[in-house]
Length: 85
Image (cartoon, rainbow, N blue to C red):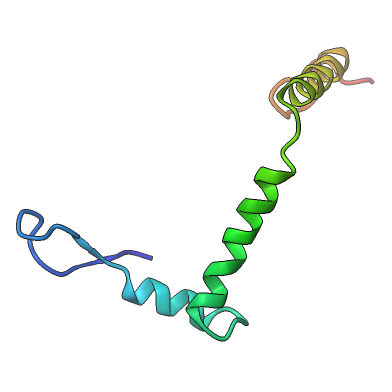
């Protein structure tokens, strides 16, 4: 979806007009209005920030996944380097 320009770039302080985008997202959702629709992502971001995992735990999980991939000989989500015959 692209935005529509209302004036030239130099004349306008707010160059993008997002009305069509807002109407498109509201028309393709099951929420009654923009207020309710906007609240859902805000609630998710709030929940995600409140339930964030410790950076050390995330780093340990990444290291473990990398170790398992290296044992299998898998690089970048592809096939093993030496597939079993």
